[in-house]
Length: 360
Image (cartoon, rainbow, N blue to C red; front, side, top):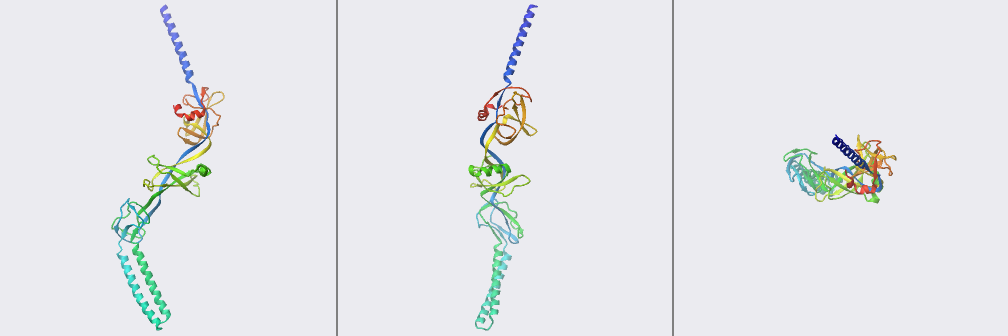
């Protein structure tokens, strides 16, 4: 019996010691890290969806009706300005030119005979003028026939790259039919839409900060190795989207960029007196961002915030927080609304500088 009492007493002591140890561990675990927003000047890099266009991208169309007699180039080929690309069967236009030239020769003989008679005062000067007018008309018709014959040859209007053919050899083409397209990719125009707030920031600081240079993130998530320059901003905002279109010009010396590609423009803008917090100090409910604010009684209270910009590991806060507010940095899933906690305050500059040390 005595042994049993001793054994039970030992068990009770062990339980009490274990409970005390657990209480002590729990008390240590519930000492949360807390910080405040950091106020400082910074820069943000915004991404804008972009469309890439050649500086010249045109449609080449048939200028005359006829059968496509010859194709001198291939799809995807680089062509030089003035290079012959297509030839439409010229038989009809050659015949028209020969006819016009023969008519011009005949009228020229008539004119010379009339001039001899006019010089001898056999015919009037009015008759000579009429013969001259006929000659001028015949020569004009020769010029028109030469132009029509020239239209049977389609030449490159500038250096560029051919697109795929819309017709094949031997096809009957009508005047105005599309043959192919031609792109000058020596430089590329990249169009992107900027919201009103970012536009105002850009216009405010563009000159003092030299913000005209932008970068292009390509579809494979790699940065294009050339920087672009913002050269054009459209006149009006789109009332439906609230955006305005920018155009940046990028050099394309290696021909990597092609007409019709997509990507993202990265534009760096300054932010004065930005209020910065770690992203890990926030949580989301129904697509709204919240933080836990510690009040004067050390109680946890959730507060909605709005985000002005997002950068790696940090948010720039537009509204909802003040510089003096204390926010919960760790243990957001372990606390409850209005719960009183113990905490350790960490200076915001130290938190931002060492975010990786506070990773959960």
